Amino acid sequence: MEKNIKIAKRGSPYKYESSLKRKILQELYSGSITRSDLCRKYHLGGTSTILGFERWYEDDQRQMLTSTPMIPDKEPESAAIAQQPQSVNGGLEEELRLAKLKIICLETMIDVAEQTLQIEIRKKAGTKPS
Image 1 (tube, rainbow, N blue to C red):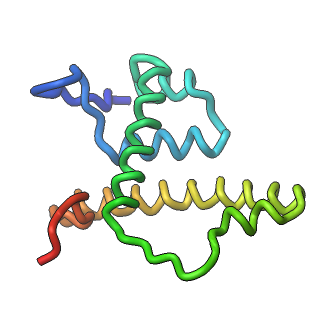
Image 2 (cartoon, helix red, strand yellow):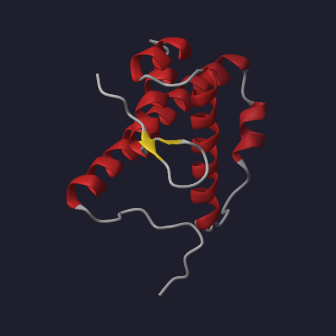
């Protein structure tokens, strides 16, 4: 397998494609492989690289959420969840895990479409509406 590393001009010595980061995180979150096995499989420097990918993903999601205004129209879901029994919360945790996997899959599809079509599909965070 070839190395998935690009030499960066500035900053850290290695830069990884966002589609590769999402693919690695998808495998990690599926629970079928460990961090150290992923490092060997993708020729990464160490498990701290994957931790960096997780931080990058959280920041990316946070930027996407802050760039989209949300209008609350009813009571917060956290209050409704707190009133539910513990067994229902376990089901909600499973739904959350599946939703995270779905997001990773959809983002990977967008990355592939961007590379294939040579266009930017995602709206950049902080851009002004036209």
